[in-house]
Amino acid sequence: MNILVCISQVPDTATKIVVGADGKSINPQGVKFILNPYDEFAIEEGLRLREAHGGTVTTLTVGGDSAKEILRTALAMGSDNAVLVKDDVRADSFVVASSIADAARELSPDVIIFGRQSIDFDSFQIPSMVAEMLDLPNVSMVSKLSIDGSNVSCERDIEGGKEIVSVSLPCVLSAQKGLNDPRYPKLPDIMKAKQKPITERAAVAAAPQVEVLGMVLPSQNRLGVVVGDSDADLQEIVRRLHEEAKMI
Amino acid sequence: MNAILIVLEPQGTSIKRTSLEAITAARGIAGGAPMHGVIINGTSEQINAAGAYGLANVLNVSLASFANGTVAAAIATAATTVGADVVLFGANATGKDIAPRVAVRLGAGLLADCVGLSNDGGRLIATRPVYAGKATVQVTSTTPSGVVTLRPNVFTAKQDQTVSVSVQDLSSVANPPARTSVVNDIIKNDGVMDVAEADMVVSGGRGMKGPEHFNLVEDLAKALGAAVGASRAVVDAGWRPHREQVGQTGKTVSPNLYVACGISGAVQHLAGMSSSKYIVAINKDKDAPIFKIADYGIVGDVFEVLPRLTAMVANVTGR
Image (cartoon, rainbow over all chains, first blue to last red; front, side, top):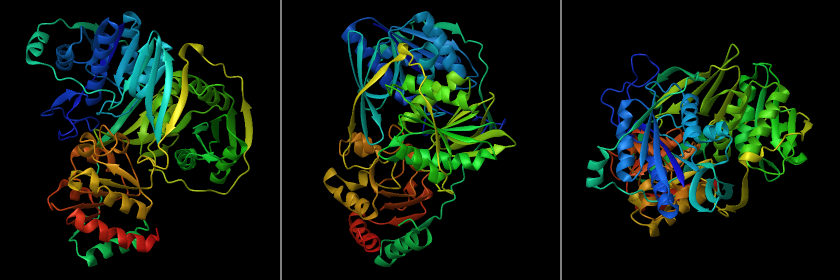
């Protein structure tokens, strides 16, 4: 099985966000960048599919040179190949999806696995976009997966339950938490991964479709009333939620 | 703006609230542009439900399959049929899955998970949270048309003058065979309100000290008519199911009222609930970060506070 796992590098959730001089993006100075947490599930699932069905796992990311770091993590976890699509700007999801689709046409994988979303722009759009561009079926938010021959059976999380969805290979999947427990790379594998080659390819020339006009840090206009736990305090909060906020 | 197409998701005899919210949001930006709905295999009851929200025209598409690729093709065809340059979805599991396909088919920019929407002289401008809600961006599509998904519970669904709905059947949509997916079954969490769809959510964290104490959280949820949520710590510990997890690697919620019980407020949790309208936090640590984003903070022991608070709430709600 030819497995393609697509990953992205994102700011650590705990990092402090500062708006950059352009007023439209973050100032990357001092920001710690990590492998997108959902992509760990995607890499792990790719490795498990290889263990069950044979084949190779190729991990791909779209980004600048710094993104090689997450490809090395994927190699250390056990990925066979790594591809960096060089794009320092990553203008929008459509541009990134176009580059991924372009690479996938050449790699012709049986299955393409993503994390369900990247935690920087949280758009949830690249897996479905890539599927549409490649004319493939897709299942998003997969929390359980089994592949038998070319039949792919998935459980997918929806509001208030789960959908049981089946598709045929080749297909596009996005991984939800619960799909697996990602392995930690071992130190010798981390060392070996540093020597492994990373294939570089050019991004496709696609025009962005979404423009960021401005970025601001949201002001939390909270009431900020902090009280103790006396009956009178609790009663006052219930009264305010009922009478003023009309919440209850 | 030429026309707006609103994707209507059926639910029972009506349509989902996220769809009603999308109609309301459409009214806010239409500025005279015609509004159309599109529904897949809609019944007359479901379609008429849109009339109370001021939506007078609905395209009803008959499809043999609810496969996402097929539904996306149908919605894109509907958009072309009515000349829509704005397509609105609710940003739920279905909308997030299908909207990107529709955007690709229409060659339209996708503005995802938006919490604000405006019409700036014909240009669609959306506000959306990024970086786990630590920043917000204003975005617009640079293409002639735009596809938008709206974060559930943010745009309040408001009824309008009821109109009678005229229905146009659209049955000539080809099912693209190459991307067939088959939904074999849907397993519903019976009797459980989903945290992402609930008006009110009561969540418990590590401060609940064990799964056996979650009855205190459930009791308050019951008194309020709220869904039960959980922090990542308690889901990872196996105290609560993943479907209840609020925050990064869980669900993003924007209820009217969010009550955090014994949750310290790690940034990963705040990412999933900071757009709630009212936040109440109960924690015995007065320095817990959750208090920084709370409207009402109660410094106290959840085991002491919850039973009394539940009784007071029940007294008001009668539940």
